[in-house]
Structure formats: C-alpha cells, structure tokens
Image 1 (cartoon, protein in one colour):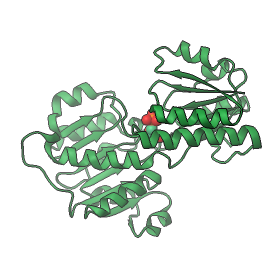
Image 2 (tube, rainbow, N blue to C red):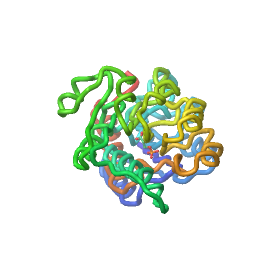
Image 3 (cartoon, rainbow, N blue to C red):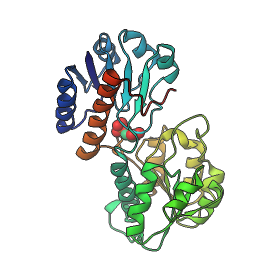
Image 4 (cartoon, helix red, strand yellow):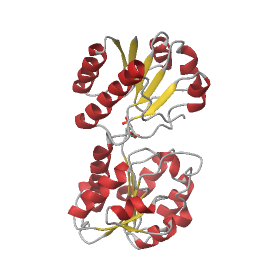
Length: 304
Ligand code: 3PG
C-alpha cells in the first residue's frame, strides 16, 4: 500500500520522519509531494496511492478522479473545507481530519496577534494591555478552549458563544445567548468558526459595529466567515476598530493601504506552523491511516 503526503506548505522534517516511521513500520510505502507548484504534480503523485495526507491542499473532484486507488484521505488539521466530501463519498473514499492536534499552536498565534495589534504592531506608539479586557470566543471548539485557557492566565474576562453552550459552561466560562450579545459585550473577539454554508460572510458590519470602542477582531479561522465589504466599511467608519487575520482577505491590498496599523494579515497561514503542531497532526494522520487500512477503524471520519 502507498501513502502520499501532498503538502504545498510542507511539514517540519521531524513530522515527516515520524510519519515515515509509522507508515513503513506498518509495512506500507511513503511517497512525498512537498512544496508542489503546479496542481499537475499533485495529480501525478496521487495516481497510484491508497492513502493521502494533506494540509490545506485542495482535494477537489479532479484530484479524486486522478486517484484511482485512493481509499482514505486525512486532512492533517481541523478544518476540512478543502476536501470535496461529496466526491470522496461518491467514490467510497473515507475522509478524516485530526481534531485538536494543532489547536494550541493556533490559539497561541491568536493571543500573539492580539498583543501585536494592541502594541501598535511593535512600532512606536501607545498601546493597550490584555489584562482586564473582555475576550469573546466565537465558536468554542478545540482552538477556542485553548484561547480561553491562555487568556485566563493573562487576566482577561472571558465570554463564549457557540451552539453547544454546555461545553463553554463546563470550562467555567460565561456562555452568552447570541453572537450579537458576544460582540456587544467584548473588547476582543477571537474567531474559531469553520467555513461552511451557514458561516459564510456571517461576520458582517451589523455584528462588528456592535463592538465597544477600541473593539478588535482576531481571525485565525477562515477568510470565508468574514463579510469582506462589511469589514472594509467597519474599518472606514469606526476609526477605533482593529482587525487582524491569519488568512488574507481578498481585499487585503485595499485594507493594508487604507487602514495602516489597525489592520494586519499574515502573508501565509501561520496558525499551525509549529514543529509541535506538525508532529501532532502529521503523526495522528499516519496513525489514523494505518488503523483504517489494517483494522477498518473509521474514528474521525467526516463524510459519514
Ligand atoms: C486547520 O484547519 O487545521 C488549520 O487551518 C491549519 O491549516 P494548515 O495545515 O494549512 O496550516
């Protein structure tokens, strides 16, 4: 059996070494297609493999069509909006993610970005402190939980909003009844929504404009959840408002030019870019593949 790691943004070497150990230890062959620059390279690499590990790489219907032997694809990470689940299901391919494996890395970046923005992007000027500020965790999953844990240590007052109120309350955090209430209450909002048809462009001007003076949104989730025109309007109309994102919006050039230090986006998604996160998610992916191919274990399947 052949296992392909196809990563335009490659894993740390230690993660690839660990994946190799697991895959070869199970008697399978590991194939690498790293830092590919053309989707044709991905199509060629996937042609005869049984299993596939990706990061944010798009596993489209075209990729699936080229992968004649594919039985399982694992997204080494949380968000699986890059997998065409319908195309996988149609071909009987099992799709999985590795929930929780890179979430601390993303959470640390979210808090780091909040400090970076509050401190004028580390340029001269008077900033703010996190101590005593109200933090709103929008969608309380694995990343949101880590953000809340770190923020608690920094003396922030934490609020959460998501569909599963009980998971927030179980951690001793105040769950608010609506997104509207969260935005009206909190100085800083940390976004952790997945990208799907329900969340697309859901963070709009109406919601953002509820934020108190000096409100700030940190987006380490997905660009699709932001209504980009609404964001531009908010930055233009509210000169106190700040936005930082780990995923460049389509109107990045305009926002960077117009709003200076109140706006920031990383050039390439950095959230899970730590050796620790690569190792956790990469090794979990390899283990899940071996367990599926050897024992039929479907834990973490997302296309049920
Ligand atoms: C995730 O959903 O796990 C993160 O967005 C990480 O994405 P990456 O593996 O492309 O860095």
